[in-house]
Length: 172
Image (tube, rainbow, N blue to C red; front, side, top):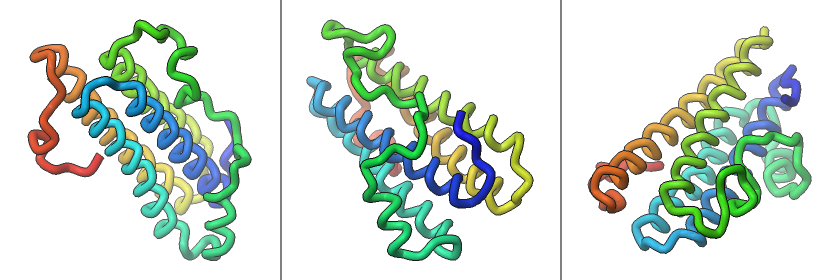
């Protein structure tokens, strides 16, 4: 786990997690046959992008706009954060025969691991600003897990993806 000792470390970690999540959900969307499944995964990817906007507002008094843009636009990884797999087919338990349920399960695992990752980071923090930032990130990840779990359970029960409106128009 990378060490988060100050606000900038929290910013860099949050950016990396959201960028990794975005890539994961876009790959899942491209590999999902169901149109509704594609919509769900694309919505989750867009939510990761919106999280970056939320984090930018949280950090606006900590870093300048140009520094923020440099951080977000950088293709360099801040840390190796093993939460979201980079290749769905090579992820543990996944292969070319994996189903959309497998992808949902993997996404749920990733979101749960993200919450656990941030909880461990938070244990060693003394800066209240950084703790608050990490708490906000944890809530965002918990929301994703909840939505994915509902989708997973619905497919297991009915064999179909939720209709998008069924989720109450919630942002993912």
